[in-house]
Length: 130
Image 1 (tube, rainbow, N blue to C red):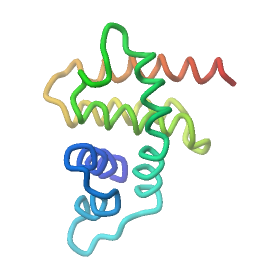
Image 2 (image 1 turned 90 degrees about the vertical axis):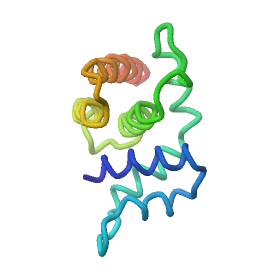
Image 3 (image 1 turned 90 degrees about the horizontal axis):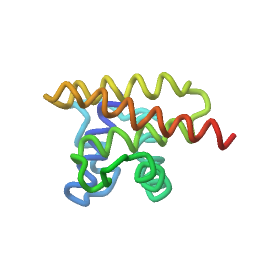
């Protein structure tokens, strides 16, 4: 659930320019508390966004980041943040979660395949860097 709420918050930040804390709060149900993981995903993704976007631009064949839907950008940014910064989350888990998010948020069945391709390319690059 934290990943879903994080994508929603990242989308809202990009769409409206609202502060991350307010975006997180808007994703919570009545009487629901934010989690440390949710806040780490949102804040970490936003803190590292320029580096993440650079990696995404390099991994997008014949596409640019601004041509992606905002929801796909949020999903991919979050996935790349996880792969780069959360050592306790295996890379394949981050990719699989991103694929599931893409399938859940998009009506287009190709969205999961697209996210898988881009995320896998970045995972391979990160593996080469280490």
